[in-house]
Length: 149
Length: 108
Image (cartoon, rainbow over all chains, first blue to last red; front, side, top):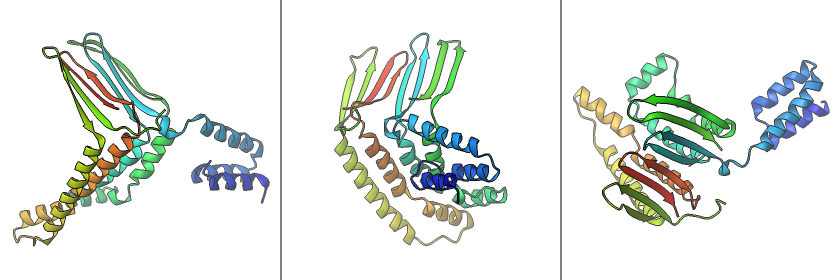
């Protein structure tokens, strides 16, 4: 086994890379793109290091109107993980017949990995998500911003 | 910065006519309240499970759906969110100002 493959496996073991990222890199090695792979590994590690610990990041919602409207919401991003448990319980509100209907359409609610989805959101969200300016007849111009900081 | 645990949940409501008022809610009170509520909901769930399903089709379907819901789980999840949030002492969670009303929720 090449040293690059071992390095990738070690990074997966340490949690620096996800299994999917590791898989992609291993595939790239097998395809003989070793120079690109090495740079990809360092790029990935650097990207991961740039993101501060998740407990310190916040999802911020800002709504500012020209007249009196002002909304300022700060939610720690780590809260998404515990809130995802709420979604899992909320799924139980879906009646059994609707569940069956969804299953027929190929959507099995039991298979939804909400916590996994929350983890991906927590890891990948960064910067501005929404930046919209609208004109309201009562409030005038309203600026809506949603971002992670 | 966020290493201290908040002790109070401050809810401030201010209207144009009034001077405004602040509710300081101790976090431990919220914790105890939700703990008790979870226990009550769990007892309710257990009692509900013992109720036999009615013969009538519609009522039968409705009750079997109600039996699948777990209110204690939902309250527990809300409790977990509040517990996690209380780790952020000094955080201004919500600050909303409309024409007449201003609402602020922060952790102290």
